[in-house]
Length: 282
Image (cartoon, rainbow, N blue to C red):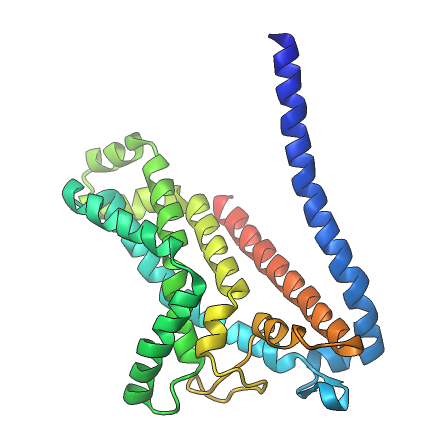
């Protein structure tokens, strides 16, 4: 038994070590190829330049940074409230028979390929936005609505699991003090599950930032700073995917440097949410 335990301990250690090495190798590749490009272009010109014209050796990604921020913020505004309220309903208000219908449908949403979401957005959401609000329909608003829909399964599943993991004594104690069912859920159970809910939101935001194919199909892919949510944008991920296939030399290095910015961008968001979560816990 001791030999088996040691063997499994080594296997688990190797698995954990492989995960860490994978992240380190990705970081090494990105920074080794991206930092020199930033040095050649100039860090200020690269991060805050407003012109992306590889043919003229202009590599400013500020419009893509702004586009990514706008689209991600829109997805949060759309997806987080709906996802959180749905999780609360499924966990504390939903009848058993209805839960058996809604939960598999939400799980099915998580398995739909990104290109199918993009096709749905192109055929349904783009015309709807164009008819209701004007413009050509391919815009920040369209991409935000689609990404908000795409992050729902992650937020709902993690938030529901977090709510179900809260000890029942919390709810019973609140009810014993005279609180209603709704007040017990929202004022006692929901704060107790804050940590897991924040984790679900972070995972959802990570998917929104990293999503590419669906955004390419509905966002307009215009490398400029938008002045309206009805204008088209190009995100950092879309910029990499669209041009990497034919990029060479400095152009290719600039795209890899864009990946470095995206990596740091996601890292900062995760750190920010963790700080907020820790403050809330204290």
